[in-house]
Length: 157
Image (cartoon, rainbow, N blue to C red; front, top):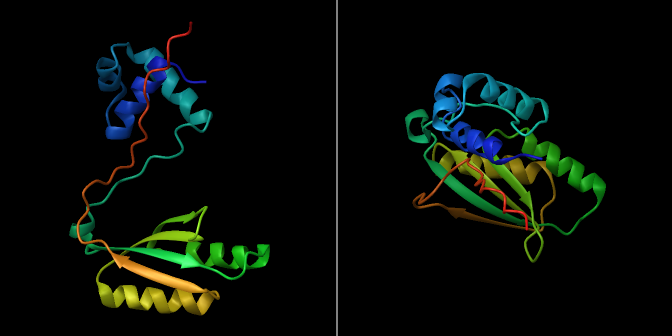
């Protein structure tokens, strides 16, 4: 279980994980040693899964985002294993979700341009049988974040 100090530390680290421990401690109103121990504990517990660099998509020529909805006529374990392996091997897929409801899967795909998306699409449909695929081009990203909101724990009664 994480407490309020852990939440404050995690909120700071989600915004900039490169900050020195001294700066994190100052921002959460604590001292360096307990903050360092908390960060180590959060890593060991798997709460901090990994630290990554978030790239500017435009500066690395990956401006286009497509959302792909997929319906399948097969829900077997074998089909799911093949589908999961196929999308895991496709670097263009940034996110893949299995959904409840009318659509079975939703993919977020980032590519250079529509031609690159077409190449991706052809690879996808060649890998696994799909009943229906719909692609939607994102015209503008209004919000994109990796942060998970962590509110303070409710006061106990």
